[in-house]
Image 1: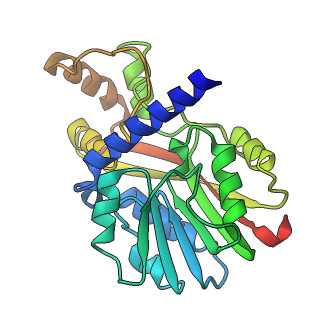
Image 2: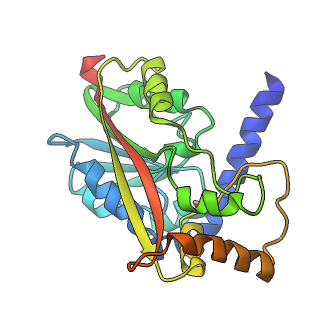
Length: 264
């Protein structure tokens, strides 16, 4: 158990460092997060009170979320994300440096838990959902989304023609996520799966977009080797089979999930 805890802590530290490096360029590449975040907000039913933005990043959704409530609390594990986010806030709001699996909030103190494309980085999704449930008020509501199995399929298939190593994060299946929601004690919830495709002129701009929002993090022990010009050219050639008149596609399969604390 101690070894597992150490590995989990090490992974959190790696993720925090990785996203800290992406903090200052994040909003230049967060088109997908903006689109999916706005769609996720549509699940919220007349929200008010205190809103917790879990995995808030540089608080890129601060303004629309703040308009829904009386007080905003951002939470992120990356030091630089927190620093950037704090510069955007009104004086009455706050951003905390913390992990989604251990929220630094009292029980039943939050009216809305909102997590936009952030919980996929949790080592223990069940614990993260349990924490949301814990901090919600009796009439509270939670909405979160995360990429599912099938995301980045074009990129994964292109890499597989070069080697068998993982080059993207592993994505959970819908059934796995639903099972983990139920294991967290959520007995009533709603969900939908949406597909969204981004289009790019070339592989370089596609990879830059992924890196810009930190989605290029891959937790692995083995080294895949350097991205040499020759290797990149081969990857680009493989990816070209997916080109259409719109450009090169990057497809996201995203699950959107919503529950009310009063149902449980």
